[in-house]
Length: 371
Image (cartoon, rainbow, N blue to C red; front, side, top):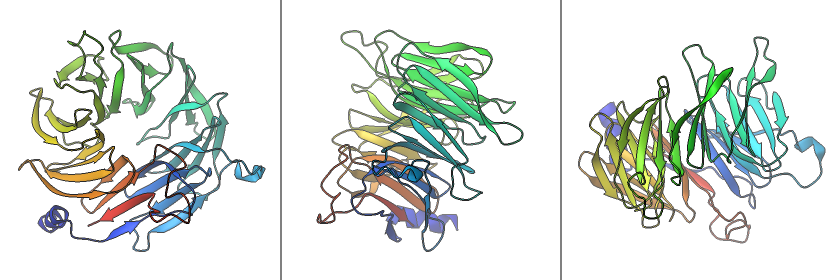
């Protein structure tokens, strides 16, 4: 069976399905968990698809602003989904939380006074983190299911990247990058600076259960600390290894979905690289996307990458060859796959692009590819 699935993915044998929403509503963000896709739009709508079903079952989640009937719904800024929760953050600073087990009404709603810069949802436990202005707020339910603010943190600079995991006791652990600073934040524990190098801002961040990996940008003539990937242990706070020596800045990284001891990165120098953390070197490098790499994921034999030019490529990392590619108009901002399906999201930078009108010829917002 595994060999059969390998051949299907290798040869791109299978059906292609488009998860298309109402025409004129532009895609803002996408996230997936185990084949369930959550998408947010400029209309303020939030849509859920279960791609594991043969009919691609679709449902619309009721939002807190839908009852206001003002006619000017806020755009969706970010969406995240886990096994049991779905979360959407809007450009007016509001956050809706839904249970995937109970109905379509929000089970929790809260508000920031300013625009939300980042959203994180813990994959394993019920914990949400949002960053707005110089504040990071963590929300969790108590034993009775009532949501409360379990953590409030302040950063001296605006947060660029935000991730949530948990410690051995199940308590949320927040990893945040604000310019050149990377913070490790826990409730009732003094904040810890994992990394800081003045003038070298963080360009990408990913977190697994026990590690954090992030790219650091070079700046000016001081390049000895730039264009690197740093990997830290979240328990000890120690740097485990430093990877890379590229001419461009790292634009994306995937640690949590990679096989043990491996991670995959995308770079502004147009290359996709796979690194072995045990020997601190690149195992393979593909010249992939002429406008830069925007999304990556790997398993034990293949790498899937997305580019700013809208190209999605599948690579055989052992042979060092491209298996196949597909193209859409907008940048590939999200990739998720398992042994049976591949989900990609092409999200426009311009929220009123050609294709948003019913009169346009290309109405693709995002696609699902199944093998």
